[in-house]
Length: 249
Ligand SMILES: C[S@@+](CC[C@H](N)C(=O)[O-])C[C@H]1O[C@@H](n2cnc3c(N)ncnc32)[C@H](O)[C@@H]1O
Image (cartoon, rainbow, N blue to C red; front, side, top):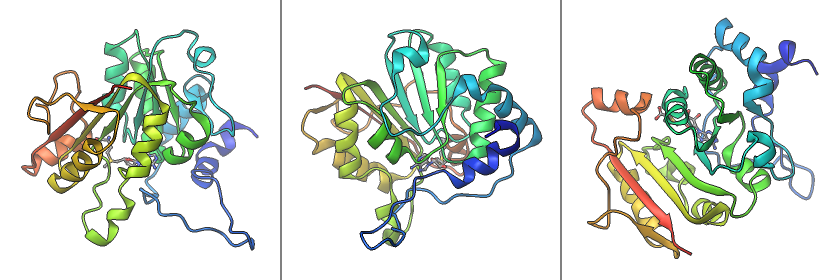
């Protein structure tokens, strides 16, 4: 299948793998995202088509081989839901001794991220356009990640939608399996109710240690670049809550 003629449309259709019940009916999933039909600009499409072979990884039913993908044994940091990718590219640029893996379902965001990575000549970054929960389940080996970044995940404000929040006990249990010992979980949100939910789940997870001296949130760290959603929240007068935990076992 040629990348050039199919890439964006193909991506939109393959953002998750279909699952079926025992009697063959399509299984509806509770997803943490709604696929927006934001337009992929010609520039984003061209950059994606030209550079997908280097920057893009596809969903596969076996584990990624990180040393082969990155050409080194540096630690791998996973970021889920990087949006337009600007802060992710900046982090990769500032930390050439680390490898970054970004997952995002929003195709224009993936295009924008690749375009910015090309502009910054960043080589230690790969991106995936797929549902992160499936990538975690099927493509990421046990104890292979040195960190997880989750910055401003969709807050799903209404109580009836809280089940869609990506941070749930089972999600953190999966992350714990994939993290190496001493690996980190760094989350940030501008929605206090979601911050409290994150804190509650992280605090009750065995094998995680909070780096906050007050055992809740940390001050906004300088090493986390401002994200697009964070800027939007700031403009609306929102606060920001950062959580930073280390896997101790
Ligand atoms: C509120 S935005 C924040 C984007 C960015 N981190 C920022 O701060 O600007 C959340 C992003 O997570 C993505 N997302 C939500 N669930 C996801 C999933 N299961 N897999 C991959 N991306 C997901 C959405 O498409 C969206 O772009």
